[in-house]
Image 1 (tube, one colour):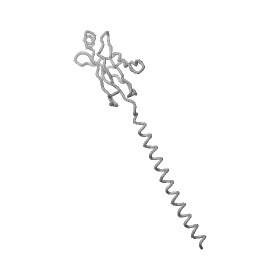
Image 2 (tube, rainbow, N blue to C red):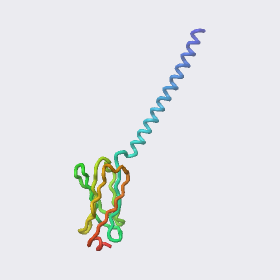
Image 3 (cartoon, helix red, strand yellow):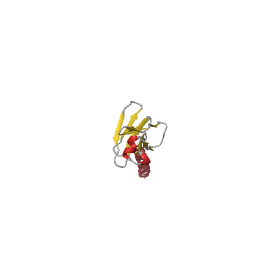
Image 4 (tube, one colour):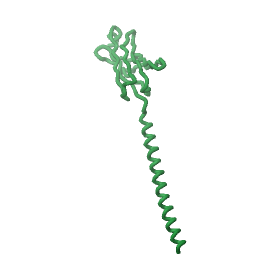
Length: 137
């Protein structure tokens, strides 16, 4: 009978170890899932968008928007659609950027997106004034 009792105790201990191992694996899976969700939050990146506007804040279609990266002086561009909007996505948050617009010889003032600005979504409206903007209004 002693041998039988030991087998039952051993079986009971083994069952408890299996339950503990399952709990540890479940906790590890949960932590891995949370880590992947955190990575999906796009930490380290941000977006810049806005509109190019002329006289009386009318949107300008066909303006060229320039985005200059201060780290390597790379310049990206986009052309505004009818609503005058522009958008630059996935910008590194540890880099300064300068944005400006040009249209028919007119140019907006330059705006700087600083690496110290921690917003993930930044809005800059760019205003083109002068003869070019009046001609498009």
